[in-house]
Image (cartoon, rainbow, N blue to C red; front, side, top):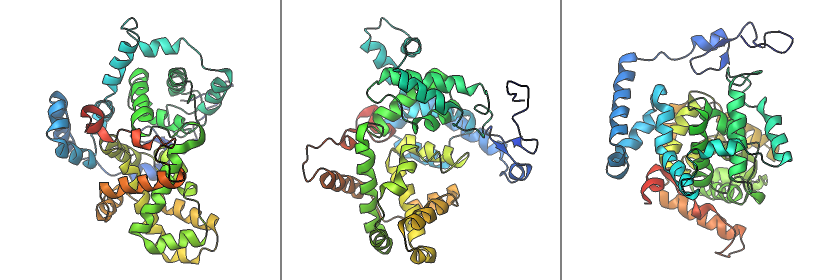
Length: 363
């Protein structure tokens, strides 16, 4: 039970908790797909076997690892898998090395320090806003302390970035699967490897990826691209929330977990591919042709995004006539456009390591 200071129960009497910890209606709970326990145990054993030979799978059997991530990581092992995929343990050891091994618990050290007062205020203000529909974070849920600790520690770790509101839901999802210290190091990897530059001043990297998405729309959906240009829709309007929060404000469990399974394995290209599926489907619809202003069109896109099942996303992602070279070329063109043709602009996109294999072995 969740009680306020005056003893009132925070939980709506009509709500129940689903298997992921979210408050749902009884009808929503009854609509959950059943889990085949035999299949689940078999898949868990496969993942346990992979953990014991992790370097081999990263270097020599990566396609098999990617296939299993696309099928979905077993819930009981998801946090551990994300920790492995992101190479968070290597980042933790590197931090200890940076302190000349004099500090054995860098996260603990960060926890004793404070960021600037305004950053601390922003973090505290956002705690109650992060997943109020989850048992860990509603009211005075125990997850709020972990969320505070992780966000505060990161602001100390990287005072230049400090804190951004979009970081809270990312940290929240991690804390649903990992203890605070492990969640922190995965969070560091997300910020420093997967989406480097997304939270920096000026949002340079997010602007680059938004423009790159528009360039890719022109390739996979010329008709939709024409609609976007006709209504003068800035790509930041439909990509900002998706990319900066890693789709946490669009999807909740289990869809967001499946998306992150792929993201941790394959990197930011998963964000691009999901965005392109949503955009292509929305912009080729008859409803898009009826829109006569940017606000209505963006609203349609955001609405349609939430209608996809994970299986629909996977099928349509595979149907995109797009390869990794196309993605890289679109990012290159976006950087050139944003920096007026100067190859040495302030971009950080080219510095970002992409996917589990490249983070660990550099290729």
